[in-house]
Image 1 (cartoon, rainbow, N blue to C red):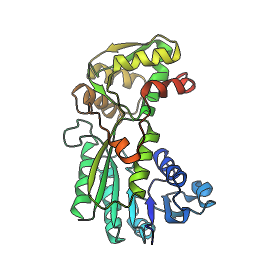
Image 2 (image 1 turned 90 degrees about the horizontal axis):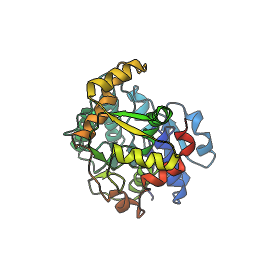
Image 3 (image 1 turned 90 degrees about the vertical axis):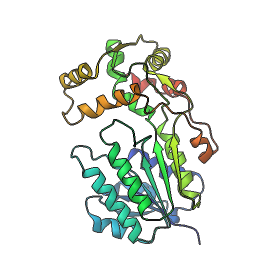
Length: 294
């Protein structure tokens, strides 16, 4: 009998892409369980035969019910960053529910190098990884790199002014398209593999902020200069722009993490899992002109 595959956060940006990849690769819809707090948003998938179940990471009882009968469970990390400790508590509840359900394999979307990262929520990921390992259940840890789509948080405004303020210095990173991360997650989920593995998912090219700015300028035809500033100056600018206080140190830490070399790795793990080459940043930016325009 084929494994039943469960995806949490199935209405989120990554979760929906994982569902699309599973269905597009020929996985029978009846083998897929998609969970969300709002299953009405999964109507397009249930019409195809996917099972939709309510799962609230703040309600462990709902997770127990949602995970019942699932063989391979993909836990997509939540976005609860406004309250310290909340995200890890949610993840641990999901791990416990997966163990109770008798899952044969647990998959989890983590982040690169959570052991050394300076990003404030890195301990959430490391704590979740350790909890999964402690269950003794075979696992796949997918350490997703920085999404190309995250550039849309800063670039439209930067292009308006022609200046991109950054404290990343000469640090480099290999952005990955969210779709490539989803393709890798779907492949790992549907693979049936039972060995425990940790993958770090990155794009194939490592670039500095100045190099990224040059690619953006080429794609859009607009000048974009990087203004290198300190972490403190960046935090002040974010506060002046009205960013919520709890988000400011998180956003600043992304640049600091890059500057300090904690996310400068390039791996072939996407290709190993999918057999495909991840999209290049230049091509992604060229295809995203409308979004970059703001």
